[in-house]
Amino acid sequence: MDQIAQMWNARGKGLITHMALKIEEVSTEAVQVRMPFNPDFCVDSDQTLLHGGILTALLDSVFGLANFVAIEGVSTMATLDLRVDYLRPARSRADVIVRAHCYRKTRHIAFNSGSIWFDNHVDDEIARGTASFALTRGKTSLFEAMTRGKP
Image 1 (cartoon, rainbow, N blue to C red):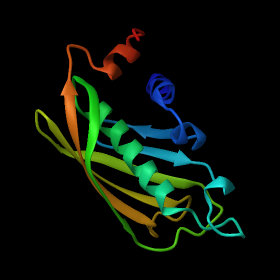
Image 2 (image 1 turned 90 degrees about the horizontal axis):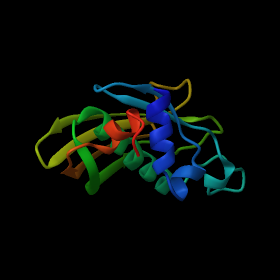
Image 3 (image 1 turned 30 degrees about the vertical axis):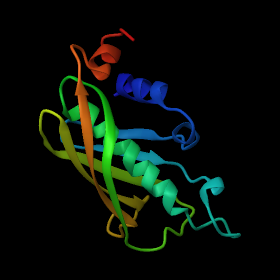
């Protein structure tokens, strides 16, 4: 898991690095990631209401991680479609947890689903999302290269 986290964090740029994401679970079945509370991502003066765009970017990023882990030979991917259903206001100062998985894959397309909740509130989803990704396959996937120590 340390190698996966290093690889994923090394590829991060911009907003994703500011999210300070921490991988909690990784398998070909699903991934789970934690985003520590950050008041910069809030849209209210009390700094408790997370911006919906943060939740969308978080889902998109974790879907990408789920794809790299679940699909052999993926070298790059691009989001084709991303849908997020916001189920309740994202109001809390707790860490945010995201769980995602790739539920179907073809040679060129991957399909994902995932959900978001606040730490210790797994039964109270904040949002749920689905996505599809265009895949590019290479001789060696980025994930395989990184886990073997070859950039």
